Length: 71
Length: 148
Image (cartoon, rainbow over all chains, first blue to last red):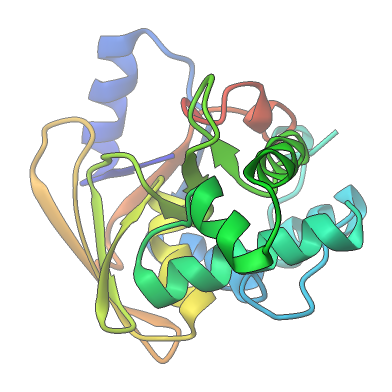
């Protein structure tokens, strides 16, 4: 999961590595996902999440579809 | 994951926050007053359970996500310490996990140009025009977490 300057740089990077595109998120969306996903990581009562709970976090920030399926 | 393993995992994360690095199995064995092999077994179980990631063939912690203890391009300043983020998601995850403001110094994976992001009160206040790319579909993230 990487940072890129622009769409042009993304296309160049994918092309030079001969990789198929995955999913591109604007940095504010990734920050929204990071907050939802990691904010409880240091809680004293942390327990591992069920796959369904993790999937619900992705869905809550609008990341749906086959690419974002954790199963 | 049983209660003992949860305690070990909690100790690892609290040590990371306090010291900026994960405890070795020797450190943790001393803290728990247990033989080191018992802690090493717990570390291996926690690795298998994806609670954290060990270096290959070792009981040294490579990632206690979002914190990383191997070199990456993602340097994160948050909570009064300098951290390394595993990837673009984890770099933003460090201020989120610490509930702190953060400054991320990183680079464009295409050209190596230095990039900066800033988080204040949970919001991205610098670097909002940047892109994040996720190459691997979610269902395969743990096939090779280093590549992901």
